[in-house]
Length: 294
Ligand SMILES: C[S@@+](CC[C@H](N)C(=O)[O-])C[C@H]1O[C@@H](n2cnc3c(N)ncnc32)[C@H](O)[C@@H]1O
Image 1 (cartoon, rainbow, N blue to C red):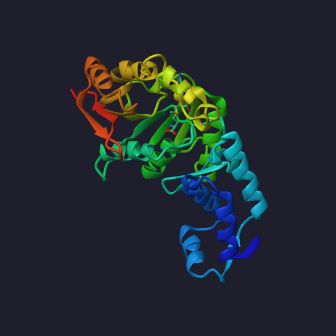
Image 2: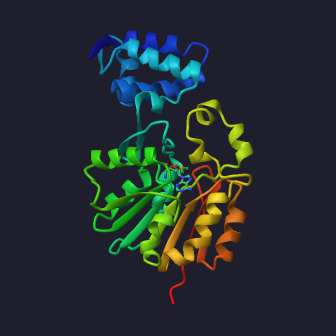
């Protein structure tokens, strides 16, 4: 525990941000996650510079993390090992994609496919990574049965630790399956009422040009969707009619310029009630469709 005055904290903060004011939000994020300083406490330190401020760790520790982030472009989430997402705090590592805010919308869209009174019996999350989507679904529909698939055993280990930290254990509501997209789900083919996926969808050439903090530290497996970015989306959409239950929903996240291509793939697969949705910046980023109900 470190105790300092509001003015000492403000001085330290100004020193860290010297010549990089645009990084203020990231530094405040670090103060909150690592030092436990809430935004309202930070604001109060401006108003009452003489009042004491408590931090959960030393300023040296914060400074060391901050310098590593700035100099080596390591994501802050990797350095603190955690990431807030929805109302959860999830473990993250270089084996998993850092959960993004827009993926919270993917989960909302999936939930919106069902009446409050009747959720899916069986659902799947393809490419679960940290497990964020699967855990949100499992918490929302505690009596459902879910399958969370990833081809990365290391990612699944992180997801399972996140499940355990939330009190969801192997054998309970979620089956954690290592394998390629639909392959581990063959035994439940035709029974899935909902399939959600945020697959790798960035075209390979675009991945190469991403910011180093993403390109050099997040798993390429989670980002790279092949030459047009659609490799995984194609595989997922093409097999969806066999894997979904009659009337079952498919809810996908995709790159901002893939809406037309994804719409075409959904139509070619014979999926019905197709619609596309925008993210918070107004970009078409999600697709929803369902298997026809005979
Ligand atoms: C964009 S990340 C999404 C992670 C998480 N669902 C999220 O939204 O933050 C895509 C995930 O797909 C996984 N993946 C890539 N290729 C796969 C494959 N062929 N089969 C299963 N999972 C795959 C990656 O390991 C990665 O965890």
